[in-house]
Length: 92
Image (cartoon, rainbow, N blue to C red; front, side):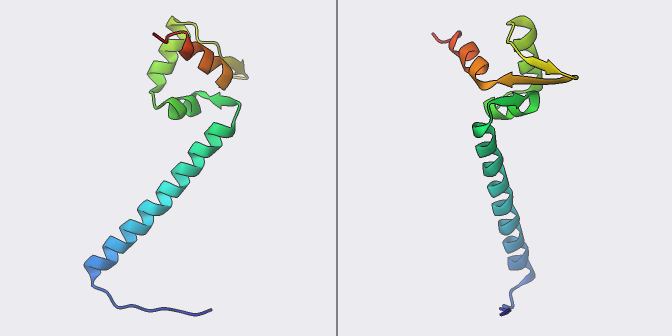
């Protein structure tokens, strides 16, 4: 395997490390978003990520607005179809 060595200042090295870290983190986040879009059922935390809302908000929607969910062995899930229909009910 070939090796490439480049001498750079400590400051530039830190900047490059941060740039690489940020890029990798963004790739993982985008991958997660794609996974969320391919699922039919989302956990509560996935639902929050999908809609960019807090757990408190989703719990309010469940309790106050009767957003339907599925509960299996203590785990809660919301179907995307149900979520879309729920959201459309608030369209103006």
